[in-house]
Length: 158
Image (cartoon, rainbow, N blue to C red):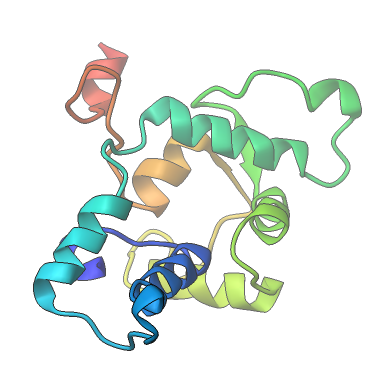
C-alpha cells in the first residue's frame, strides 16, 4: 500500500487484514494471503479518493492548539489559521489522544527520524511552529486545495 502512495493507520491495516482473512468464511476457510490483483482491489476500495486539503490539515492542527498545556480556555476556541503558533507539546498531546497509540518517546523518535537529514532542524522538532510551517517545512507536504491541484505558498502570498 505504501509503495502505491497510501499510508494506512494501524487500525486501517487491521481492518484490511480482517477483510481479507474472513472474505471466504462462508466457504469455511480463512485466507492468509492474496494475489496482486486482489491487493489492487483492496487498495482501490480503501485509499481515500481525494488528498487532504490545506483546510483539512489546519483543522486537524487546530485540535492540537486545544490540547496545548496552559492555554486559557477562551483561546482554545479561536479559529486556527496557517500562521497560528502551535506548541510541540500540544501536537504530542493531540497525537497521543487521537492518533495511533504511541508514547511521547515514540513520537520524539519519529520526528527525530523525519527531520534527521533536514539542515534547518537537524532532527529536532521546534518547541513552537505555525500550521503552515508544520505542513510545508516539517512534513514537506503540499496539500491539495479545493478544486484540485496543490497548494502553492508563493501564490497564496501574492
